[in-house]
Length: 446
Image (tube, rainbow, N blue to C red; front, side, top):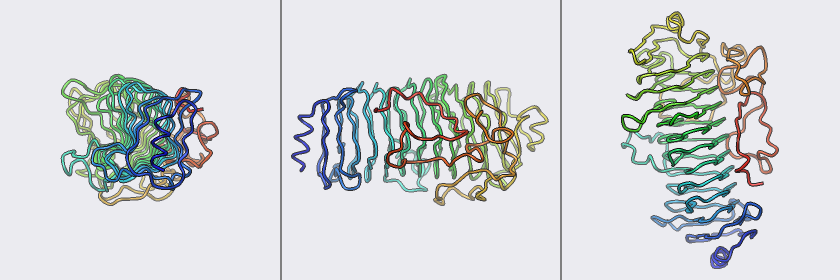
């Protein structure tokens, strides 16, 4: 009963397991107590779909608020409110959310400053926004409708399926370090799929799949980094593939590392639209696929000064104009061959129209909502075996060399979104060529 749940929350102590039977629990609920690392407090539903915490359309409430540390929330549904679940304790540590569902909320899972070592994985979050509603339609009115918002350091956010929010995954505090976003299925982002904005060092976005996103990856800005984006797949991108933007006129991005990502976009294979200078970044072993012919003839349309960058070993489609903005001025090449002849992308490759085994090509327009796609390479594609070898990232390749893009040909299929029950980091097989950089032991709840 609702009264029984409220009573259990008010009297909870370390080691308690509050088990909810199937049914609907109407109202908003708060837990103020903390567990310990060895004896967390657990709120667990009998089944994810059978246990429903319903906010009854409350206009400003959190359906479930957690103020303490070492609290686990598992296997239930939270719905029908402004916000589903919020961790309210500044500096809270070791909280866990797994295998829950949120729906009919503007915000999914929220945070407060200086929190540490949360584990938020294998959840399903459904927002209220529908594709193709994007940021430029209404001046960013929904840019803070967040799916999962984390603040502080050391968090792991993995294998969630998130759809229909402004930002699907978001770092909410400047100076963030050691945060991992991996294995997530990221759908219908009005603004950004993942915001690494404001992070300082070792924030990592790996092996996620983005479909129907305004901008999949945001680095606005990164303060020195490194901030990593590795082996992500992004299809149907309405604007920029990755956002190297500033805040104001002086807080410019620096320290971005993009390895082995695959982007499929209407308009251009790469577009960068900013007056900010991007400093000390790396684009290596990526695939950039656009339409043929590209908008205004430009395969790459990069408007924003580049200061100290490594750009090589990438694959592009189609051939066209390659325009890059360097501090000394624009370099505009009439073709891929002209760019290589000038000493840029000397190890890069020009792709053909059959890059992917599925036959996927760039969409004609972003406005049609498409299903998640398989970006496995075609066997004879020019991207096969053409990547630079990166120690501990791709040196377990198959064939004569590692492949460009997110997916190494011949490797086991990736899992995006929730894993089967019983599968987690303790027994998950990541296969070859995954490039998984994990430093998450402190956040794992076992």
